[in-house]
Length: 233
Image 1 (cartoon, rainbow, N blue to C red):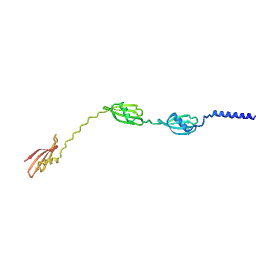
Image 2: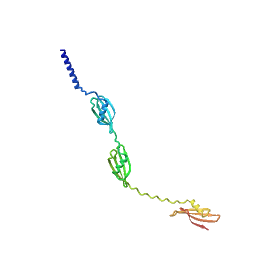
Image 3: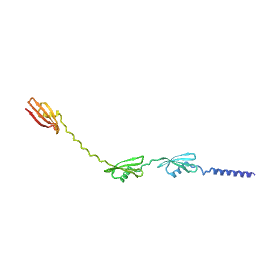
Image 4: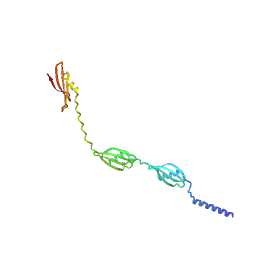
C-alpha cells in the first residue's frame, strides 16, 4: 500500500512540473548587457552609447552616421522587440568649395564671381559671371546634384559724365590794383570791374601827385595782364 502511495505522489509531482514548464517556459538564463549590445550592432551597425536594464528588457542607445537610435532587447530570448529613431543627424557636406565651383562651371559659362554655403539646406550657391549675364548655380553639397540654375542680365553702366570745366577764377579788386601800380604808383582814384564774355577786366585810375601823372590802367580780370594804359594830360 505504501508503495502505491509513493508512486502516486511521484506522478503528481511530475505532472505539476510538466504543467509549470508549459505555462512558464524558459529557454535558459537571461542574456547579458554585452550580448544585447552585440545583437543590436550586428543587426544595425553603429556604436553603443549606453545600455540600461529596464524590467524584462535592455534599453540600448546607439548612434549611426544618420542619427541616434533606441533598441529594446528582450533579456530572456535576446530578441530585438522595438527600434526607434531618437534624433536624426544633419547631413554633412562632402563637396569642397573647389569641387562645387568646378561643377558649376560645367553647367554655366564664364568665371567664378562668388560662392556661398547654406548649412541649413546643405547646398552651395555659386555665381558664374560672363560678359552679358550672371548665372547662379545651386547644387547639393552632399551629391553635387544641380538643383537650380538662374540667369540675371548685367545692366550696362551709364556713360561716365564728363566733369564740368572748373570756372576760371577772377582776380580780386585789390590784386588788380596791385598789378596796375606796376605801371604807375600813386593814389587810386577808382577801380571798376567791367564784365565781358571772356572774363571781364578792371579799370584802375591812379594819380601820382609827385610826378603829376594820371592814368587809367586796364587789367584783365582772369589773366591779370595789363591790356591798355590811357594817360591823362
